[in-house]
Image (cartoon, rainbow, N blue to C red):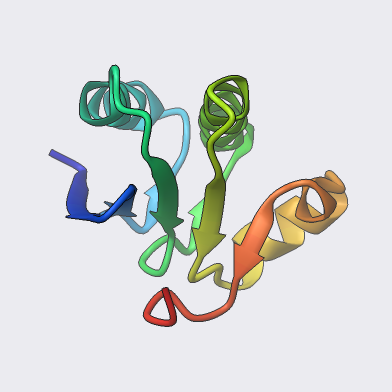
Length: 107
């Protein structure tokens, strides 16, 4: 499994356990995330601390997760963004839409 999950009251922390979130692993990660949050009505904190690179495929999984959470009127927060993933969010202007937290341990 390429993710780890920690539960707390009303919130699920999903930690991506990969350095690259790209076309090579996005299907498996998407499936793992869907299995973990299927039917849950918890807010989600997506921890990307270990992720050094995201391509458009990985970004599409994050967008789908955001849409799913939004539909359920739940939050998606993203933490631990390294340089390239943050640059990608800025280029795509998604940093204005996603709730980004600098420190994954502050929540």
